[in-house]
Amino acid sequence: MNRNRRHLIGCLVILSMMILSVPSLNYSQGRDQEIITSVSLKITTPKGHWAKAPVVEGQMITIVDPSTGSGYGFVPVVRSLKDRGVELKMFQVIKNAAEVKVLKEVESTEIMVGASRQIGSIPFEVKVLAITQDLKDQDAPSKPVGDPPSLPLCCVSCFDELVCATCGVVTDCGCCCAGGRCCGLCR
Image 1 (cartoon, rainbow, N blue to C red):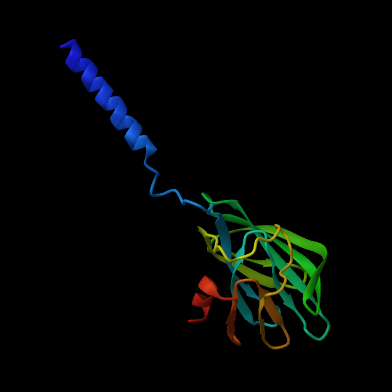
Image 2 (image 1 turned 120 degrees about the vertical axis):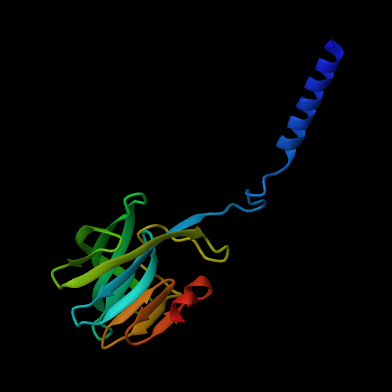
């Protein structure tokens, strides 16, 4: 009996070691997968036109007057995935050529998914449409949090307002995408 018991324990130890040595199918082998959180926003401008864009958390969507280069940038930061709360920061910006320069923070407010709020002394109505998490495209470059968008950008000109984001933008004047998953916006 003792011999059978030792044999059974030995077999269980070997079986356990074999199971633990098999790599998990859920683990991405060879590359680390980074999860990216995006916030889908709908911004209605003071002129009454709207723009929708998914904005990576901490990145900026800008709306500027192309004749002066001055305008505003909006940066979403997810405060709670569970409660679906987003802090939206509004900045005064200047865009010249391919560069956006942040001048100062104008206002910051919390908006829940599905809710809209007027923000800024020049009233923009901002609605948070959704918060999504997805695996980062391996080809997409990483950018520091809080950076204004830089080239390549997706920009749509709509009634003397230039709306730019790094993924894609849909406005009541048209649509553009930077490639990949972003192009689903323009269908």
